[in-house]
Image 1 (tube, helix red, strand yellow):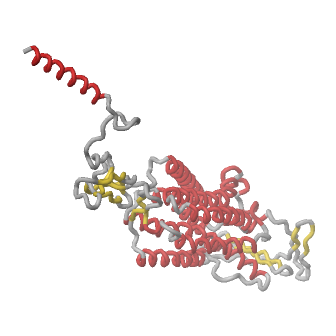
Image 2 (cartoon, helix red, strand yellow; image 1 turned 180 degrees about the horizontal axis):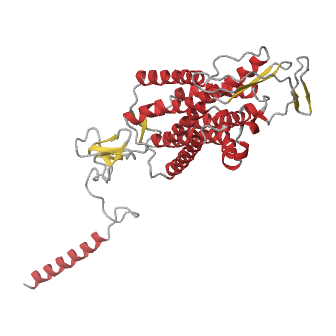
Image 3 (cartoon, one colour; image 1 turned 45 degrees about the horizontal axis):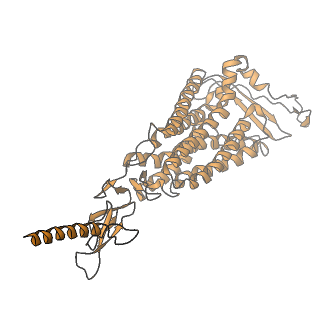
Length: 432
């Protein structure tokens, strides 16, 4: 009995000693815990299980999915389509919010404020011209073409509000048609003005006869024909390439909603014809720069076209350099169009408003005619000389014509035969 007790106590002591020794056993010095008896651990969040060949479903390798990949199954990563990104647990793809120029963007607010201010000023100028419609300053400027130019300037300012609309079939179509039309109206009016001035004084070097097609109706027809070509271009462009909004991806995390023609250089199709008009207007402005100031607007037209050329020379490289960000490109177009309209408005109408509003005593026929000094003689042999900027010309008077188309006409022709210059001033607005 005592022997049995001794054996049991000894066995218990040995068991306790062995347990303490097993706990002190280490698999590796740097890994105190024993390894788990598994082939592969479960993959973490966002990782795919790629099974190891030859081990069935027991062994696999965990591969982390890339930023724009999701897990359609636990065994593979798959890329999300452009314009989308994986959700939080990478179980599916969600669409990235559209980016486009919105009304509440700071750059859009600035552009719309600029345009709204321009529209208000354009309306004010129009009201002043209507109020003083029959005064010499307004009549001498070519009332009909001035109103056409004001309408074109108004359309230029209005284009900003079209450009910041959410892209749609209608807004994209109006943009395509309008960006060229508004400029064509402006520069066709200016081109018609400069062409009329150039033809009058070129004809005066050859003959004393009045050139053809300088009446207001003729000028409007010429201006309308120039604009009609732009209408044809715009209509054909819309028919051949239907306007529609599309998704544009400048990079992988980008999702821009843009008009189809805003991508690349397609909008330059609408700007090509106005650019040609600007170049032709600038050439005419240079050719007519030395004409007596009292009888034309060549100096102000020159300022307008020189400044416009600078603006467009800056706009074209900016337009192509912002291909990655259509929103910035559209904002640049807004400011360029409004700035071009402002140049035309300021250069062409500020001198007239200055006389009309602040110096009404100059807004009379006598004042307009006296701006060019003359020495009139009755001798046809009197030479035409230039002395201290004073023009010495022969003066011939055409008798008063009682009526023309039911209107009382008083026409005075200043003919400088030696210099071959003809200047005609008419009280009737149909001759101005």
